[in-house]
Image 1 (cartoon, rainbow, N blue to C red):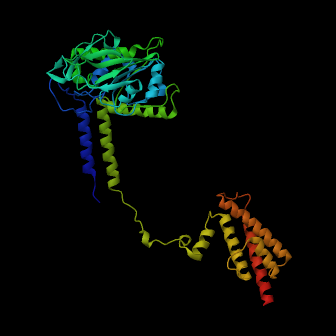
Image 2 (image 1 turned 45 degrees about the vertical axis):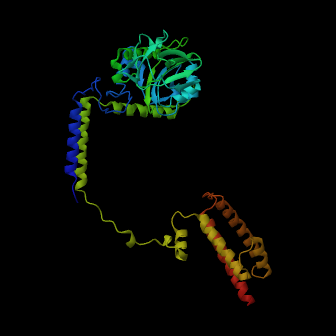
Image 3 (image 1 turned 135 degrees about the horizontal axis):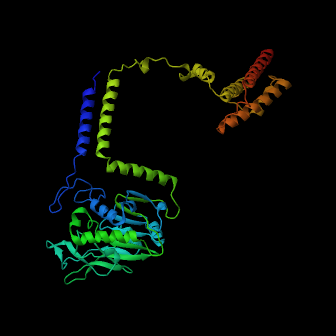
Length: 446
């Protein structure tokens, strides 16, 4: 037997080295030159140039760490009219009806989306996506995909935001939408980048660019001012609510479950607790705790492999040379053994006696198959095989066995207090006596 101790030692060394490396400070990617992203784009916890970690820190600075929560899953039953959702590039279907009910109660939804599944929520309020102008008046590096957007109204959601740099954004179009940001164009209509829709006491602020607040885009002063304004707008709450709720930051494969206004469910509470644990593991432990956990895990691997490596295994007889129990061999002997086995049903044994008695009567009466019980009793009495008393006993016996058979066909088992061993033995003795009576009568006639 090969011993895996060297492999375990190597794994332990790698774990300890990884924990030690976790204590070193992370290198942040520069924003002034392109780099290969190491994290998923638009991840709220990613520090790379496509992440949203800086936007989350801005939100925590504006509202306080306790009021800002980064989630991958939110139960709508936990929300109140004082809460707000900042949704960035959703990839799963959004519950438009539930979000509408949430906003009607005073909740606010900030949707930053250009090519995600936010179009369904926009369509619910009569908003559709349209291309932005091909010839904007202002753009970065003469690239129309990096058009500059300007505010077109004095609104709290875009306060102090000007000269916003977009990144392959999409426009919005619809009736009843309040224009907030626009991309001005030459010789063509201006394109609406952001707008607001009133939904009951709440609001929906839609912006057709999911990457406008990612880490590399926040180096532009206008984008950073917009990020702060959006957070303050979401955390202010709608008029008449009167409470400071929680602002949830959701992105990518986020999910909304449950029904707004019905309160948290048991399943939702369990999923929320699981999401909290997963989020804690993804965010990571402190360096000292990670180092200690890696050391303990490495020692555990070494001890486990050490104790398992020298353990001998008991010999096991191959299946093809093991004795086969009689109860599973089949035939008359196997059937008898299965009926006699411990735990076998008494009803099954009595049904075997019933079938045997029916076959004995059919053979003695010259029938090809067993007839109904009343006919068998009548023919046996007419042929002289049974007297009046024996025929009565046979009728009672068939009635009792028939009730047990009906119970078995319905999938029910006779309770122990209704079918005891003495009764089973008595029925078996009655069958033997009746067969003996028929044999004696047949012999006398012959």
